[in-house]
Image 1 (tube, chains in turn red, purple):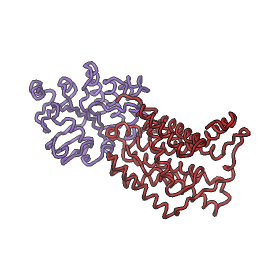
Image 2 (cartoon, helix red, strand yellow; image 1 turned 30 degrees about the vertical axis):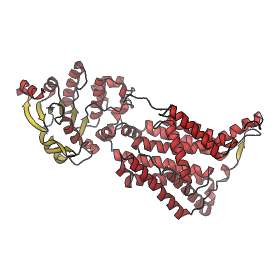
Image 3 (cartoon, one colour; image 1 turned 90 degrees about the vertical axis):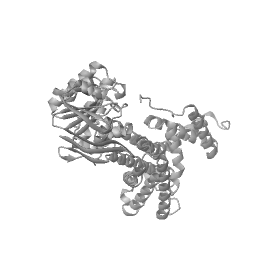
Image 4 (tube, one colour; image 1 turned 60 degrees about the vertical axis):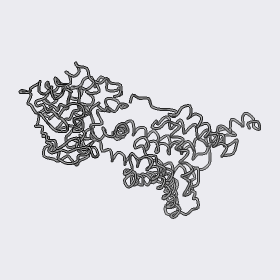
Length: 308
Length: 229
């Protein structure tokens, strides 16, 4: 399949597909971060995570249309406001979900799986009723359009650079919160031993609610980023949830580094293969590779080794 | 300081504590002795709100605790050192101690904690899971003390710890009581340790207190008879 290209063309293809893969990587990392935090803390598998992402995308869309029609002067910076709003909206809905639904189902993993799947169906229909079944696109401000030419044959899109910068920022912020802040310490204590965390004075229920909110809020920001690479429809989230699970499982649950490494390898494989063969063949090969690796290494890429 | 009256605790249908009565005076150390399966740990857990109370009351300084959640009891001044220590093993020693700060509303570990347990200052950056049993026990006590308790509960603090460290722990517990003026309730199987630290020794059998002695008048042989199988 490589025979039709010269060496320098191949080089350019790999660089540009690699870059396109990095945007996919960003969405995966943001989605998987939220999912992994929630799973690590509460053992809850959130099937509705994709819909929280799409909620963020719709919030971005709404902000864009509002700014366009009412405050056109501020259009160039609307994206930052949209991201903040997406975080708040998804986070708030996440906390509401935890309070109304999830907290009654702790220690019943199969039930939470079904309940959150039901929630995802409800949210999809709600999106369809409110925003219509047609996919919507977000118009980007002028400075995010276009691309930077690096060589004659290599160009990288500016919005891609922006999304990646954003992802790095959020990942660093999450790592800081979990490993350095007082609240992160409480989260880790609850993860390790819920009963004992309560017995040293930590309000475990509040920690749960905030964690769920944070995980969903990050999904909302992922949704904001997602509007740059895909169009937003009621069921767009579903396409990503399976891939995101794959990222979390492949990386080794509850390992931040593993999540990043696995998101990177999956998105790069996917993106590079897509250029040379059809999208579904690329997916098949990616999945087969992951299955093979997981058979040899069931605990994922990076599993934390500690005395129990 | 701490008063338990007519406490019933059950796991489902099987009742473990049948109307237990117990009180601890301010600044007093009380030891609860008893063989395995007699309800010592259940009593501790129910006082912390880990096992639900079926009926009866637990009051501290007049405030009713029996319906509160664990973290609310800690805020009221109850602290707990569990059996098996239950250190957060992947967190560092310092972080372990800091988990207790939430209840006291403080930001930094008070210096007197490290004065009490110098070894914890040395090991500050190590993971809790890599400490020896005796060091973990000190860590668990330090973690409980930073919540500024009025009553400290210890569940079998000597379990799995070498004799020289047991003497250290006894000395430290008495020092804590004298310096901080708190009350201590400790469950034990080692009679010498209990007689060393306690002002009063109780024996629990089948979920009820069956014997009580002040240390001064304690009849060692009588208590030992309760403990032998």
